[in-house]
Structures are given as structure tokens and as C-alpha cells.
Length: 334
Image (cartoon, rainbow, N blue to C red; front, side):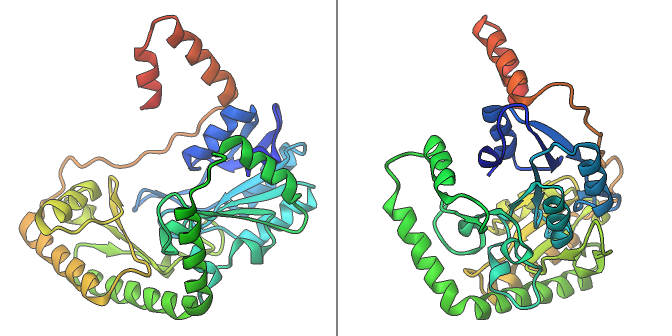
């Protein structure tokens, strides 16, 4: 998407919490990021969506930018006001690109947030392998009517193998067929499981499984109710600690844990009994491992300053590495 929209020196408006593939694209094409720094929920320590006012400000201050990129939803299920952002971008003559990696189900669920294509976005990357049931590495790239499909194919040919995996492609087609026939029913069941889990986890005490109550009409314009995100600091455990305990003590592999939260990614392969196992395990973890939380870290967000392009930085680091100072590369990768 980025390589389609941008060439060297072009500006692109995007949130700071973009996927690393976006930053890699900036290295490849030489575009310059204009960051719209997301608001951070102080209690949860998570990045929220793009505020309309901040997007409008960025567009006004950078009228020659070629595109606006939006994460919708975020890993935690936070959604921006996508329709408004698309409208602002198009009125300024910019493309709107959507990282919809975690939003496959938006196209099939009643009561779920608006999908990128329904909101009028120009392009959206949809990771079918995350919530759609296809094999890992298989995804869809959706394009709107004003995007030249032939040019997009040329860009894809620059970045992907000419020997495509028929295993991955067939898994996409099988998953697409399944969702076309049963998608609404499937994701309605997933949403019901997640809502049930939220109620049960919050009833345990100490945990906070957050949901639609976060919606404020702007930085949290909507919430993906299929995401089961749980704040853990109130039981004195970091999210990554709970993640490790679930895996090592209870044989439950969830999506991830960070400083203050865990995320259980519910999708079409999950059943009610697995949700019950997770709820029971969390209740037991609280009983066995709860502490007072003294000394726990809190997340801090520092506004970045753009002083050079990602491409220029990459080239400078490469030059240093080629001169024999290999340790620099390891530090940068971290």
C-alpha cells in the first residue's frame, strides 16, 4: 500500500504505532512520515486511535502529503473514526490506506465496526490468517475503484516471490468461501463468547477486561468486541507475567502480553469450553500469584521528532555495519 501511494520524498500521514512493515516500506521508497501521535489511555497504557482534530491538523500543515494511513482496528480492538478520516483525506486529494490486519471479521459481522472498504478507503490490507481462518502468511489486499489495479500488481511483483504458494492461495479461497457462506453466524458466535468472557473475568475481581465502555466518539470511536483484552496490573502482575503463567502452568497459549495487559485472540476456531478454561485459569492465577504490585513498571510514551527519513537512516547504519562495527546493527534492530 505504501509503495503504491508514495515515492521518494513524499510525505505520508500515519500514527506512531504502525506495524514495522510500514516502516520497512518507508525504507524502501524513501517517503517521509508525518506522525499523528495517538492518545494513550493512562490506566491501561495502550495507544488509542487517531483523533479527527489531529488528522485535520496534520493534513493542514502538510498539504502535499500523498496519503493518510490508519490502523483500524489496533491490536487491542480500538477503532478510529474511519469514515471521517477517509473524507478528510479525499477532500485534500490524498489516498486513505488502512491497516486492517485485525479486521477481517468487520466484513461479516452485524454490530461490528465499519470495514475499510465500506468507509470508502482506497486500499486495505486484510490478514485473513489472523481471524479469517486461512494459513499463516496468507492475506488479502483490497483496492477501491480509484486505484489502478495493474500498478498495484507491479508493486506486488517488486516485493513478493514469482513462485506463489498454491497451498496459501487455496487456503485463502477455502476461508473466503467459508466466510461468504457462514461468516455472519461465525463472528456473531465469536462476539458472544468474548462478551461472556469479559463479564466472567470482570466478576473475578482484580482484572479489567475492557470493552465498549472505552468508546468516547473520537480517539476511541468504536471497539471490536471480539477482542478479549484484559488489564492485569491491579493483581500485581504484568501482562507478560500472566502470559507466561498461562502458557507454562495451564497450557494456554494466548496472543501476547505487554507491561499491563494480555490479549486473547478469539476467532472461528475457538469454542466455549476453551473460553471457560481461560476464565478458570485467570481466577486461579489471581488466587495463587496475586501481589501488591510494588515496583511494577508503567508505560510511558515519548513524542518522536522526525529528523531524517527511514531510508537515509537505514543507509547510514548499513554503511557503519559494512565498516566493521556490527554491534550497531544489533542495537538498531532492538
